Length: 227
Ligand SMILES: *Cc1c(COP(=O)(O)O)cnc(C)c1O
Image 1 (cartoon, protein in one colour):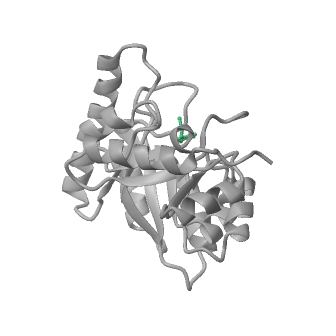
Image 2 (tube, rainbow, N blue to C red):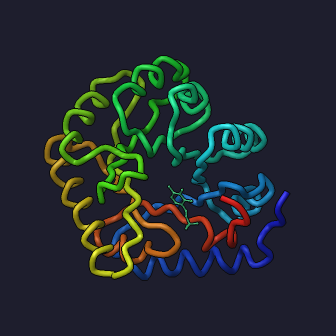
């Protein structure tokens, strides 16, 4: 098991200050705890962080269970295989990576009737990369319509991981395209309220382009020793 970052409290406080400096409006921080131990999550929760993001279903479910005594909010942010829908629907509060209609039915079916609706972000492949999951912008309205019509799911907005373009202007243009897509979707579905973009390397730029949820891992927990 990995050690907890010895400067966790300091790194967390300086991240919060940077987020605040970059934004005029409230921005939600999802602390990405993939590969980090349940003790690291517990240590950050003790500093006041509530929302955590996990990429792998098995690892995420294990931590949800181990930390069930804490009132945490769990976000699934990894690629979702259909055989993992049950785990996600049962244990997570948010799914940020819905990218195809075939996942809707199993997610809705496995959501416990006593739980609140699963909050859903649709993942957009904003730079049309072959290697990345996410739906193309042209197919977004139809998928959004299907999520809105599904029981036990609540469409909240969009998420993307832009390509790591070497120059800042091109990266900025990707964020801007996602923001434009978000605004036109919001015109159709006024209840959506969440635009998830920005990670350790680029959250300030993402906030500048309209992100109101950022997913940050290594700037809080330290570098990951494996993916
Ligand atoms: C790992 C990961 C992050 C966090 O990345 P950092 O660079 O460590 O901040 C954010 N979003 C997704 C989808 C990730 O997989």
